[in-house]
Amino acid sequence: MKIMGFYIAMCVILFTVACNNSTKSHQNEINTNSIQSIKDSSKTIVFFGNSLTAGYGLDPEQAFPAIIQQKIDSLHLNWQIVNAGVSGETTTAGLARIDWILQKPLNIFVLELGGNDGLRGIPLDVTEQNLQAIIDKVKAKYPSANIVLAGMQLPPNLGIKYTKGFATIYPKLAQKNNIMLIPFLLEGVGGNPNFNQPDGIHPNAAGAKIVADNVWKIIHPLL
Image (cartoon, rainbow, N blue to C red; front, side):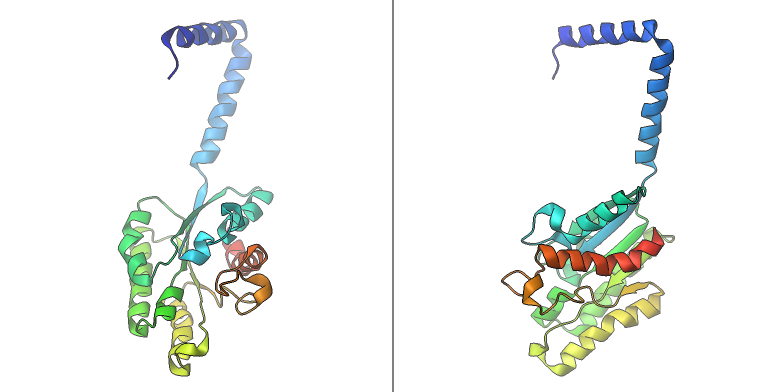
C-alpha cells in the first residue's frame, strides 16, 4: 500500500499537470475510457473440458485454447477465451460444476467432455445424458450463445460395440440440439506418436497446434 505522503504528492503532481494542460488531460481521459469500453464489450468463448482443454503436460500458452486466442488476437478480433478445462474430468463432474462456470456471461461455449468417461467404461447412456444436461443448462442461461460440441473417439480396447456407440453420441447430440460439431477433436493427432506425449493420450505442443486448427475451422465462422 502506498504511504499517505507519497499518495498526496502524486495527487498534487497529477492535479498540476491537469491544470497546465487540460486539453491533453481530457484526451487521455477519452482514450482511457475507450480502452475500458473495448475491454468491457469483449465477447467470451468458454472452453469447458478435461485435460485436453486444460493442456495437460504443456505450458499454458501451448494449450489449444491459448493457440486459438493467439489466432483471434492476430486478427484483432474482440474476443476473450476462458480455459475452463480440468484434468481428469468426467461428464458427471462437468455437470456438477457447470453452474459455477455459467455465472459469467459467454457468447460461445465449446463442450469437450466424454473422453474420460470412455476410458473408464462409463455406460454410454450416462455420458449422453450428462452431456445433454450440460447443453440444456447453457441454453437455459444464455439462449443466444453458440454451443460447439467437440466429438471424441476411443481406441477399440473396450470392444467394438462400446467404441462405435460412444462415437455416435456426439453427432446425435449435435443434430438433436442444432449445435455445431467438431467431428473429431483429435483428428490428425490421435494415435500418432509424433504429435502425442509419451502417454499416447495427450497432444504434445505440435499436436496441440493441429487440435487448435481442428477447432478453428468450426468456430472461426462464429466470430
